[in-house]
Length: 107
Image (tube, rainbow, N blue to C red; front, side, top):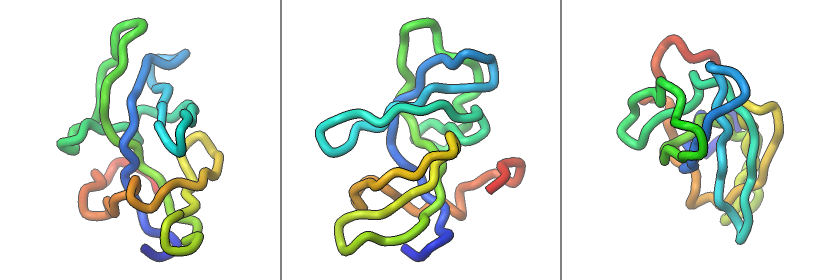
């Protein structure tokens, strides 16, 4: 994967503070990474947008869009996520997604 590659990261989504937000939870490296993303970046595993808010206290499994910042050796990749943060993830966790991105999602 090259710098600028749009990728999907497996995660879980919970209800956010606003109707158009989702809390994402990425399980990585023995812990969890949490952030808040606009719902337009949140998808089910089959590529459908997550859509309606999950019920309070429940999780929806899915995928979050991210942007590769750079490769960190053979096993890791630095990814910019929609919460504005940059995370180092295992390369096995990220899947190229450019062909699957709906046209209404800003990248």
